[in-house]
Length: 369
Image 1 (cartoon, rainbow, N blue to C red):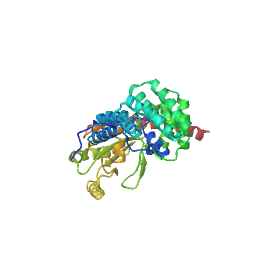
Image 2 (image 1 turned 90 degrees about the vertical axis):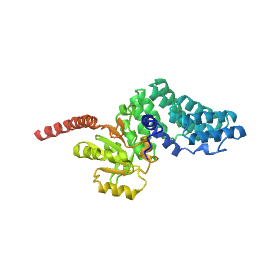
Image 3 (image 1 turned 135 degrees about the horizontal axis):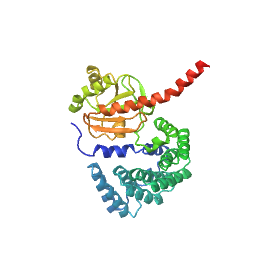
Image 4 (image 1 turned 120 degrees about the vertical axis):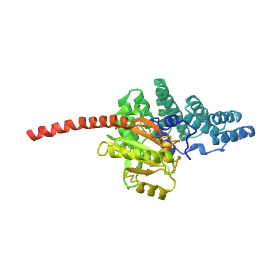
């Protein structure tokens, strides 16, 4: 059954791929996870009932109601429920309600005891301010987020992700030299996320991209054993197609995807089909039977890593990414994307020629000397 209801794809995508968002997961891995200490929820009986109600609303998909109910539970508990505030923050960020996310982070600061815990909350606050800045083009939010990233690093110098986040904010403030330094520090200090280190190196070379609507970094091993990463495909246009063997509209769109892969063969275009099948054998058999010779990867469902990164809630869904990794377009269903691809490929070829020209000129000059 197609999952076509629920959240609008574009809204999910915006939440999933704001340029700074991947850093949050890195910080969580580095932190001592201070929020695990103390009770799992409020101690006050009335607040506990409200807290459980909030969980129920969240399970039903009523995220806005759940957010307000978690905040209510925190107040009923006298402002002592760190778990209420953590859950409220996560929901607020997903909904783009940055004011409530900032409120939850600030209210949580008096509840934690260690520097590492405080660093994590300053980082959360910085991320909310940064995303608010991206959404509203507010320089004051980027400046405020830098202050919070600095506070996180002062409390926990090992929090390498704060360097990445600060680099993004500084890039939006057009402080490119300072942004490069932060991205370089992140790439040097981080030990947990190779994809994000690669992205940081890209931003260090070209801070303009840190201001763009970049596709999220990822790396996968395809069905034929090739290891590819999005940033490793720099210079090529990428078409990502999310599908499944059980999806009728996906099967109908298959000839179009096959024709695109055939028509643009030999040009700077990579087509990657991402299956949401949970049955690996059925997927492999289908790919072989239908001559799907372009790159194939199985993500395993709507909760798969790539589906989550791209905010996929309905299939078929395709995404076009330019040669610099900037997300250009998204489509639900078999949209006519060939015109867009032709333009992106032409730009990629032009960029390749511009890079090749100086090298060719130098080679010619050397031969004539």
